[in-house]
Image (cartoon, rainbow, N blue to C red):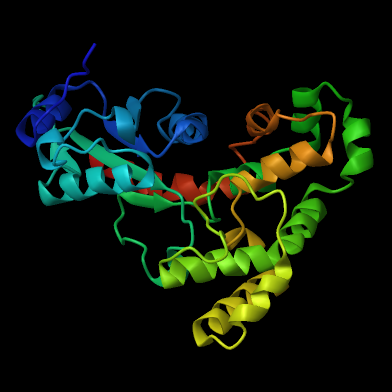
Length: 293
């Protein structure tokens, strides 16, 4: 069955007629639960109604997509661009109460901030770290979540991972040269030694000595220096892709082979969205929702 697809004018009318006050656009499946919890709390547990769309499922602005199916981060950005261009980011409801409807777009930071590529808008909220998965591992209970996912006790997991943040820094450091080359590849806009952030899976083998080929390249040296500086400040999560942690933990636990998705999902359920870390997302959303009043 084909999904209903709206032109720009139909998009505006649909938004105005909707019962929702907040329209939320996210990149992928992991994001849906994460941002639904953020929105649920900011929206007063449902008093302000909201709806979350994956980019690929959002039926809006299809006449400006040039026949392309929006998906992932690029899809969210395309939708934001259309909404901004056509003054749909904040619109008046058709009711007589003067209520407004607001759109918000959540994006993984990736390394956009380090390349001055972030889009500045109160309707766009970026992750603090490389991606949502970094937040899940930084702020969830990794030991409890992993134990639940792989049918181990917390004590058994703790014997392998005494402290989750120490473990994260350890594995991120083990892959630091790979991270440097991924960042370098982004700066060069080409694949370098098959190192690319687009991979959700780290290679089974990686020879870090390949770095020697690039030690005379000024751009690589800049990338290397920046990554070293971030690691020295324990800000490795700005450049280490969070999706890699789940697979590395899967390997660490050995008897959990192939359970990385379940591990990530179980850790995510341990997040405390009332904790201070969540303010990074909640405060800008509160500011945006103030426009609805």
